[in-house]
Image (tube, rainbow, N blue to C red; front, top):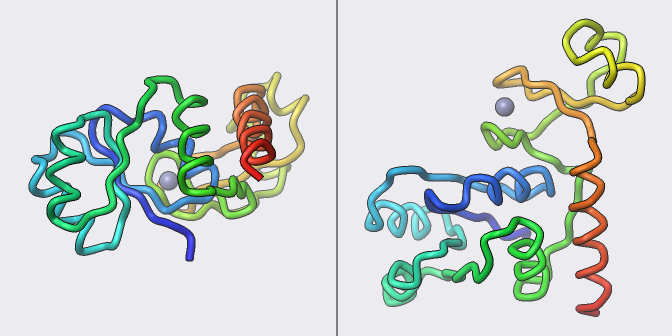
Length: 156
Ligand SMILES: [Zn+2]
C-alpha cells in the first residue's frame, strides 16, 4: 500500500509536491503536536517534520516519524525516495491545495481560465473537482520529476 503522510507547519511546499506525486498527504498548520500525533495514529499516516523533538515524541507513541534533514523540496523528496522507496507517480496526482485526486480536463474547457502564454504552449490540463483549481505541468514540475527519477535510479 502506498504510504500516507501528515506534515507539520514547516513543510507546506513539500506537502504540495507529495500530492502532485500521487501521495495522500495532509498538511497541518498551527496544530498542536498532540493533535498531529493523534491524527497520524488514527489515519495510519507517516509524520514528516523538521522538529526533532516532535519526531521523538511521535515515535514513543508508535508513530512512524521522519525527520526531514534539508529545507529544500528537492532534497527532502530525495531523502524520502531513499528512505521509503517512494515512486513518484503523477498519473495519481492529487490537488496540491486540498489533497483530492485531480481529473483530466479538455484543453478547450480551460480556455480563458489559464494565462494565454500557457494555453498556447501546454496541451494537457487537470482540474480538482473540489476546489476547481486547474493544473498543468510547468518547468518546475519537470525539474522535480527529473530529480526524483534520478534519486530512484541511484537507490536501486
Ligand atoms: Zn483542490
